[in-house]
Structure formats: C-alpha cells, structure tokens
Length: 404
Image (cartoon, rainbow, N blue to C red; front, side, top):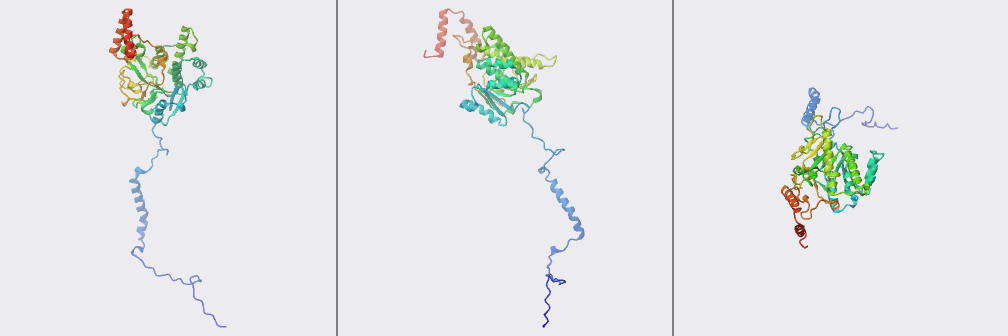
C-alpha cells in the first residue's frame, strides 16, 4: 500500500506554528512610557475638576437634609383660599352681566375655589354649618328661617359664611380688578391680622346731619376677607338678631312680617352695623391703657394700617370711583375691585326720605355745598304757604318729567 503524504499543518492542528501577518506600526502605535501611563488618572481627575468648577451654577443644589425647598407662598395664603358669592340662582343660570362679573374672580384667581350660595340652597347651608353638626346655634338657624326681607337675609348670610368657613366674600356685582394676593400689602405681617376690610364712606363732617350722619363714616361690606370663626362675624349676627326682634316687638308683628325703611337697613344690618361691630372688636383687641379706636384713626387715611388685628385698606381699594371720600378711580394701582351697583333693587323696596320739592339729600353725593343748599331749601319750605308749596312741588315735577 502506498504511503500517504503527510497532510499540511493547519492553524487548528495541535502544536501547529501560527504565522501572524506583518504589522505596520505608525508613530502613534508606540507604547506610552511607563511614567506617562501612571499620570493619566491624575490628568483625567484634573480635567473633571475644572469642568465641575466652571459649571457649578448648572448643578442642582440641595439643603442639608437633601430636600428641595418649596416655592415661596403668595401673600394671603394664610387666609382660606375660597371665593364666596350669594345670588338668587345657580351660576349655570346666570345672565350675561352676572357671568361677566363673576368670571373676573376666577380669571384672576384660577388656583382658588369658588362657590355661590343661592336662594334655593341657602337654608341647607345654614342648617349644615349652624345646626348640631356645626356651630350648634339652633337660635340662629330658626331666626334665619323666619326672616323674609331679602336684603336682611343677604347681609346675614355673608356674615354667617365668613364665620363658618372664612375666605373672600364679594357681592355678585363686584368685579375683581387684581388677583387675591394683591389684596395683602407686603408691608404688613399676615400673622398680625385675621380680617381685611376697606373704607367706603369717609365724610365725618356730616356725622351730625339728621339723615346723612349715620352713613357718613363706614367700612365697606360688599367685599370682605376673613379667617374662619372671626368673632366680629358672630357678634354681627347676634347684634342683628337682637335688633330685629326689638323692631318686631315695637311693630307688634312676628319676625316674618317686619317692615324696614332704607336707613333702618343701613344701620341695622348694613355698613353702619358692620362699622359699629368692627370698632367694638378693634377696641376689644387694644392693649390695656391704649387710646380708644375711633373713626378719626381712619379719616383721610392714605395707606393701609392694622388696628386690633384688622387690616384696614384705603378707600380706593374696594370703593374707588365713588365721587366722594377722596376715593380715586378704578385705574389706580390701589384699586382692587369695582362695584357696579346693579345686583339688586333693594333700595326701591325700602322707603327713604324723599322731599316732595327737593328730593333726596343723598343725590348730593356728599357734596358740601349741595347738602347745605338742600338743608336750607327744606327748612325754608316749611315757612311757605300751602300755595307756595304747591308751586315748588310742581317745579320739581316739571324738572323730573318735562312732558308733564
């Protein structure tokens, strides 16, 4: 048998010699010197340190306990973040005018809650918050149920809402001009007050006038901000109950049949009553030995102040554009809301003094010369003969209705 030739060795054969292809070395292929290799980590660390140093502002910063601080809170955050309004019907049924006014509060304060108490759900609210599961004042619940005059219920309800839950109350015809946090001047510390009000009428020169006197110095009540359970709100409700029952007794009728004139509403539940209760609360909060708080403390006030834990804003804050009390205009920086005076015709339902020949003194809008002339004319009218009085009355009738 012919002997086979020995097969050639392959790379996979055992003990086969491996021939590598020749390698062409470039200048960069030479190995680093041993000392240079040891220095590489130091160079890398140095470059990294430079990078961090020049980018410190871009790196996140942490507190000692590695927690990011929350953003600063806006002024007014210690007060309930709730907007309250009251009206005859539900917001879904609002007319265009009411919708436009109410929407300003939501547009300026999208982070706040909003609620309207209506004629159909007001009793549910009162029973819930002043019944056994709330303040537990059945006398207040029963009183509110028996009162029938809409304006009295409206005044009562705003005080009761603010006492029960706090927040900002605004009449339905009040437009928000600035966001809620602008209502709180940064120059005051929020922990120093629990109630925010504004001046409405500042005309103390008329304080002794027989008709204007009781309305000449007053705080505004179409916009009020309060923390829950503020004592002045409950005191107002109790004062109104006592006064109203006294009126009913004097008229010899049940509470449900009481009738009031315009000035009785103002002094009994409206701005005058509100002002009286506020001044009493301010004095109650005064330190022992301090001087008594009077309207003089707020006359011609050109900047806000805190008195008796009540922040009092200037007249232009809530009552700009009135044409009296140096109230400024709605375009000013300090104007926070705008009152449109269209929500209710309650004044027409409650008689006010209207002289047959010279009309209402309120038509003077606190103009000193106009009021003085009105007073003189009214006094002189009483000295006229019956025929002369008829002439004066006819002159006014002609003035009001030229076609008559």
